[in-house]
Length: 144
Image (cartoon, rainbow, N blue to C red; front, side):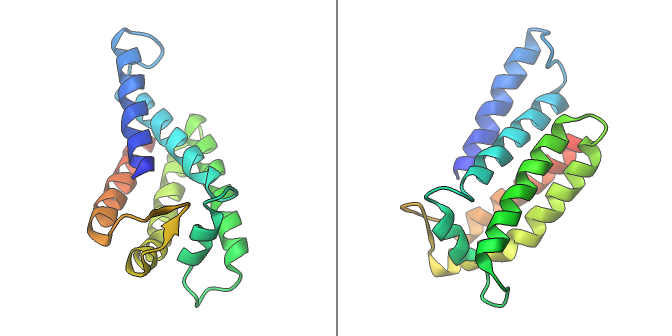
């Protein structure tokens, strides 16, 4: 739920700045910046105290969960940076949407097992699915 809050609050903040005809006068630019910040926020969890929870989310059929969590964090950072560069924003949005879709089985597993990220239990499956749809939609819109 925290990534959703980051997305909404930063999007609104950038939109207000854009309303006053400052550099962010297009909703898409505000959305792109908000999504980049959201992915940077979520990437931090891949190396902090939330890392053990993310490792538990990795389906047991996949090898080396530590490596997978590290790589996905790196991909989130690369994708966030890619969104901020106009020439790469379209491909970055596509890649981030694919990443979100590929990672969704881990979200399902986390909801079914009631995994805790940090000290908080993950969001249940239905709200998590709705959030995932919102994230994928926002990521795709930001790059087009």
